[in-house]
Amino acid sequence: MLKGTFFCIDAHTCGNPVRLVTSGHPELQGATMSEKRLDFIGRFDWIRKGLMFEPRGHAMMSGAFLYPPCSENADASVLFIETSGCLPMCGHGTIGTVTAAIEAGLIQPKTPGELVLDVPAGQIQVSYRQQGDKVLAVKLINVPSYLAIADACVTVPELGELSVDVAYGGNFYAIVEPQANFPGLEHWSADKVLHFSPLLREALNRAYQCQHPLNPSINGISHVLWTGKPKTAGSDGANAVFYGDGAIDRSPCGTGTSARMAQRFARGLLKPGEHYVHESFIGSQFTGRVEAVTEVAGCPAIVPSIEGWAHVFGYNQIRIDDADPYAEGFLVR
Image (cartoon, rainbow, N blue to C red; front, side, top):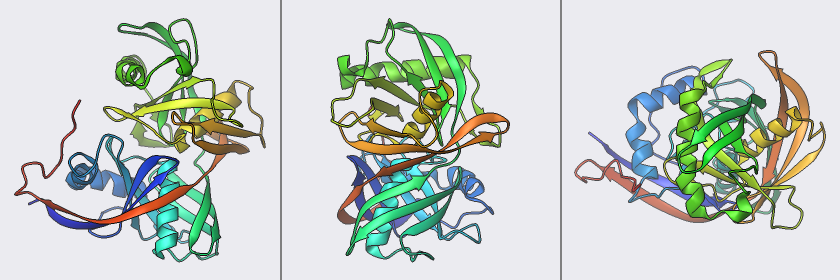
């Protein structure tokens, strides 16, 4: 039976939704959040679908559950859910979750202004600035990020040949720079991004294998990041990230910004200590920084940080009942 009542705090991070689920948590098996993520996918994915898909959500919907820490040094654990699945890591989701949780008093940090969070992709460190009851900004130090495949070439139906880089920033991203068959994001509409992204992703996943060397459960190219000239003052680059079946990230995308910085570092375009202000499709900004240089299973990598803001705008109670023919929701493609 699919039944449950879920209390939620709804927020957005730089324009992209974050639904923090505060009740109805299923009890998950596993010692780590990576193991708990796989258990959730295997037994409780109906909860994700019911809360993220229409009619209770929409194509861009993203959310999270807070769980007790898995590690002794952590303050809490986070399970990320969205229309595309149960993610290993989500940057905009972390910023929104921390903002909503701190403002609602759901987390009591061991050190005021700082958090250590266990996530399926590993462990991240978070700091936040607060004024009264309001969280003004959240900065997260993400998991090590690296360039996985350079100059991957595929032919995309109706578009032609594209050369892309694939980088990891918590998820695997196909990063498309302007070239002969892609004039740059500033010349494309949202419709074109939505049309060509799944075609490119499918072609890449047929031609190339992507798997995190330390966590085999993180595999496959899930996101497509199209780049172009920024429109907002102070931005170093602009992007539109496609995910799921038909979503464009309204935020600059945290794991996407991490992947972008890892790609630029690998190509000698970004140095340790340098900042990278990334602009979203709607003009909102994240400030990224290369915090340190490291490696992942012998592969050169960076430790990236992302800073952004979020706003809470509502509280709701959602009921899922299998008497409803759309208990698990639906997507219109």
